[in-house]
Length: 544
Image (cartoon, rainbow, N blue to C red; front, side, top):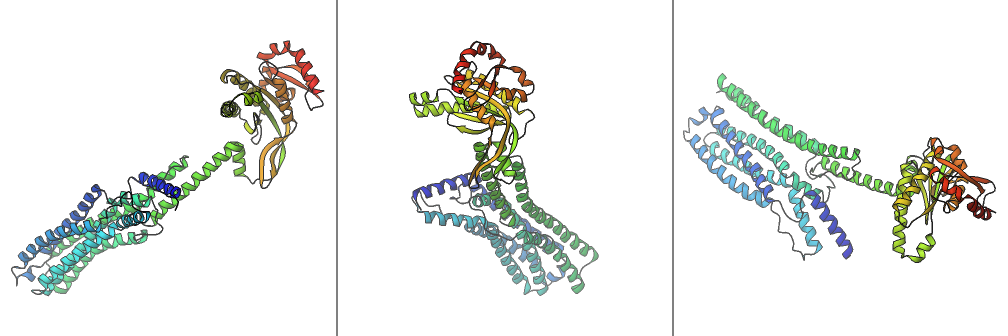
């Protein structure tokens, strides 16, 4: 990979990991490790305590320990010693299972960095399974220990204690697994946002839901069923004792089932809610919305897919924006919403043509950068005025611009809009652009509007007499006060705006056969009337 390619990849990686809340090059944060220790140790201590209470004081094991008076004390001592050892061993082992080697130094090669990131990713994504494995091994060891501790003195006692420990271990591990998933959510988001999952990492949504029922509800209820079966098979249960057993085991089933179900529901709902929130942002037009990918099931793929979709929408909107800037928003929208065909239709339109005065002199006397800046300032005013009056810029022609009113979007008073735009543009150029003047011509009439060119390259434009007439009117406009002239055709098609204009002359414009009435805003009509004779002489001779 080239230096430029590596630099772009590193920049993209930094941007993604920063958005996810951290750098993937480091391992788990300290606060995450502390939280993991709490959610792993606390449920197991509570679960072990519940198992002890149920085995020692709830189940009717009194008859079984009468022949071995030291059984209860022996089990209590073993319980205390094993619990202490399990907490220490589990904490150390869990820490080692979640430990990530130190990140490579600044001078490390790309292969070493990729290997380290892969290790971090593996540890984070398989964290719940790794810690659940540690807890499962410790509970299996406890089951074996307490069965061996009691089976030789009483096989039934050993079996009862073993079943109790086994059921308690399954329920406790299930709760711990869900809590670890919740604690690691930010870490999972950190690695998955940098590289979304290509497939499921852990059990999917369906298996998660079934497992929630099996581990949170079915397993505790199995204890109730076994207690009932033992009562039928071996007796020894008084009515009060059986009621106590059912109450305790049923209560444990309710509590454990509730915890596992709530944690599972939260794990399932959180990704969906995150996607829904981001979807609302997209609906409101925010195409920068992204979802942190923190789920390792199909829901994580949904989150990653949403981000991919939004990225496509963002790119499409960028292209649409660029398209609109080149051809105009109305034209772009029409092209995107309809099939594009070559050819056009006759439309009633108004045209405004504006041409910079003295552009050749400016280009010869000023640096190119300064000329470009002046043109940009000039066109910025032109675009602003035209858009304010519901027109669109059809094209820029060097130092000139052609604006169209009434196509592709029809207007009730296209000529009136063009005339108002001409007056406003004349005023703003005179007051806002120092050292810049332009001739403005306005005309109206029927023209062909449509896509001109070839299927390989075309543009939407208008062709017809109003376009030619507006261009010729700019020549006359450059020589009169106000620098804006409209044709009689534009006034005849305009509404109330026509009252603000006055016809001052009629002449044959260059390249045309018939006379054109020339109109100017009334505020300039007086000055233009004084110049009328001289103007007629100049433009008339040029028209001949």
